[in-house]
Length: 158
Image (tube, rainbow, N blue to C red):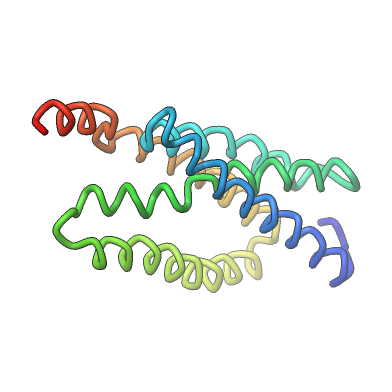
């Protein structure tokens, strides 16, 4: 694929996670303005092309792509936790645990699964599979209840 050294791979990982930290911060701010559901759908949709093109980029272009991909895909992380808390208002601890625990657990299980696929079919196959996941997440988020209308309804009742 890219034949990177461990140090180069670590730098790219840092770029992705660092941009994701910024994305998480700004995602929270933007979700207050446009709504949580809209942010979830948009961030995943925007992340998809960056995930698709990453395996074909080299040098500075791959760093820029990872910056944008990390920012977009992780901007919805904290918002997804809060959205889950809104969906289970009587069980906020359970909602938080499920959303974070499922994400971390699925990542751990998925890394083992994707490692097996990589051994059999190659790294490029894994990249193609993983690049489709944000699109699937965006489509699933589209079917979530609209948080903006619920806020208006609660404000009207109060």
